Every structure is written in structure tokens, then in C-alpha cells.
Length: 404
Ligand SMILES: Cc1cc2nc3c(=O)[nH]c(=O)nc-3n(C[C@H](O)[C@H](O)[C@H](O)COP(=O)(O)OP(=O)(O)OC[C@H]3O[C@@H](n4cnc5c(N)ncnc54)[C@H](O)[C@@H]3O)c2cc1C
Image (cartoon, rainbow, N blue to C red; front, side):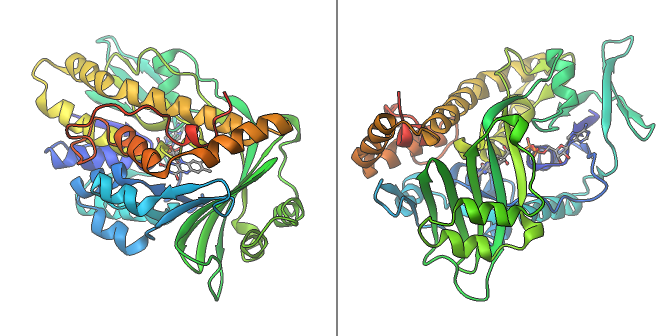
């Protein structure tokens, strides 16, 4: 079977690796001329590590990644998360990695597995041929007509999503993220932690090593004012000038050209992720807001499940697509919703709302939080936290800053 994959991001390359392991020979088409060096970092929670291990990548991730032990909200004034306990409960480690390093590992394994990644191939349209099969046209004049086309071309302007749903209109979520990577000669953060600070705005920072920290700052803003400043570091420094350490230290240790402004957009859930022989995966199918902390992890899970669905189906692509949606729809929809709930709680400024939010965060039970996250994130995977587990009431990160 000829398999084409649109998009060489986390979803596209991991799907290619998972399918290659099952004996398929997929080909990846990526719009960029070369591997991306953009972006800050991602946290790969234990459910992602499970997939990375299955794909044979975990050792390489360990070599480039950090092992966070704890997550602190407002220096623990609003509680936190015992990541070491979460890892033990789920049976796999959490890693923090720079996005470009993760991409390098994925592409290195793709090269070793003999998977062609065609850079400089921006899909501009997909149409059906006379036999009802999708044909992809690229900006450079090339085209391809695979038996199975996987749309892994992200959230913002996915051509595959447009083909499947008939439209693709990400909607602005009312806040911006500045993202950056700070590197210092000395330790920037005291320990291997994920730290979260709130105060109308939000500043989150994640250690990969004590001297290498990626961060995301967030502020509610109308889209018309979401324009990158000439000196973004200056802008972020001013905005967070009065915040507790290590915020200022981390911003100062970030090169000006390593800061990027993202206008955070979301996508409405789709009723179906497929049309004809095209299937959406990753953000193109079910992009959660960055506040879910699970987008890349879910892209990796898609890869693992899709390979298994293809392997076990006997009745053609319809059966594969149905099985895939049955396994993936509920979990990804729940995580996306939790990301939205979390985002609503973050930017509250009304004192009463903030009081309720903070009281709830403080009152959360650390053991219960770990149990909830382990059950939710492990759902559908053969991980220790899932085997024999019954559902636990809660709501991912969303429950940590719940306001409704
Ligand atoms: C600030 C921020 C922090 C985040 N933190 C985390 C985290 O800690 N943990 C986590 O799990 N997730 C996190 N995420 C979410 C995660 O980054 C995404 O969910 C993940 O990257 C989705 O992978 P993807 O491959 O589906 O999409 P993408 O990473 O967007 O990749 C899509 C690829 O398709 C290519 N492409 C696009 N259009 C075309 C086209 N027309 N033709 C060919 N190629 C095309 C793009 O160039 C790109 O390479 C975060 C996101 C943000 C914004």
C-alpha cells in the first residue's frame, strides 16, 4: 500500500516510524525547506514515553531530555504535582525536551529506517480523482496519489483538514504566548522542576537542565493588539518585572532572537477525521490548546494506535478509520476540553473568581491529582496505571485551576 503523510512534525514523523515498524513504506511531505529549528520545548509525559519506547526512541530522548521531578504552582502556594510519583504510577518517565532536539531524534530515526522525508513540499490542494482517491498537489508542481493519505499538517492551515471538513478556521482564543529558550553559564532554576506563576498573566518555565530552561509567558490580549514588538525581550521583561525569581533571570538569559510570539488559536472538534482515503491525525485532527500540555503526547499516541489499527484490520481502510476514531475520539476531545477550562481559569482578574480558583487549587489533594492524571493520560494504552483501573473523577490540568 502506498502511504503519503502530509506534514513532517511530531505527528507526521512518528506515524511514519510506527507504520515503518509494521512493514509499510510511508513517504513524508513537509512544506519547510529544512528541519524546523523553531519553537521552545515540550514536556513528554509518561504516555508519550510509552509510545517513544515502543518506537525505539526512548534512549535517545533520555540523552537529550531532562527529568522533572515536580511541578510547582506559585512556588507551591497553590500546590503542585509530584511528577516523580506520577512517573512511578504510570511506569514510564516524564521528559522535558527542546522541540528542535525532539525533531532531530524523530528525523534521525526516520533516516535510519529509510523513510523518505520530502522537504520543500507544501501541499496546496487535495482533490478526488475519477476513482474517488485523493490526489495532493504541491506548490512546487509535484503531486502524489497514495492509497492512504495521512493529514498531519498541524492546526493553523491544514490542507488535509480543509479537504476532510470542507473548511479550516482556527479561532483566536483571546491570549498570546511568548515562548523562549534561556541558557545560562550557571543554573537558572534551582532544581529540575516545572514552575508556574500566575497574576493576571502567566509565566511557566521548564528545566531541561538547570542551565537550560524553556518558557512560555501568556497574556490575554485582543487579536488586533497581538503584534510582535520590535524588541520582544524588552516587552516581556517589562511585563514580568515585578514577578518572583527565577522569572526575570530566565527572561534575561534568553537571546532576543530566541523569543517568538504565538497568537493561540483553537479548532472546533470535528465529527469525522476522514474522507475518502484521507485520515487526519495530530493537531490537524484534534488540536488542544497549549494549556492541555498533551498535544504532542496525543500526536504520538495517534501514531501507535494507527499502526495497530492498520495491522489488525481485515476489511480495508473504512474499518481502520472507524477503529481509529473509536479509540481516539473520546480521549482527545476530553483533553481538548480540559485545556479550554484551564485557559479560562488562568486569565481571571476578578478578585472573587481568583479567590475561588486559588482556594480550589490549594485544596487539591496531590495523591488524588496523580491518580486522576495517570488514569486519564494512560487511558487506551497498556500502561500500569490503566490496567484494571476504574475511572477517577477529576479533570487533568483543568481541575487545577477550575473556576466553574
Ligand atoms: C507554546 C506551546 C507549548 C506546548 N507544550 C506542549 C507540551 O508541553 N506537551 C505536549 O504534549 N504538547 C505541547 N504543545 C502542543 C504540541 O506542540 C502540538 O500538539 C504538536 O506539535 C502537534 O504536532 P503535529 O505534528 O500534529 O503538528 P505540528 O507540530 O504543527 O506539525 C505540522 C507539520 O506540518 C507541516 N505543514 C503544515 N502545513 C503543511 C502543508 N500545507 N504541506 C506540507 N506540510 C505542512 C508544518 O510545517 C509542520 O512541520 C505545545 C504547543 C504550544 C504552542
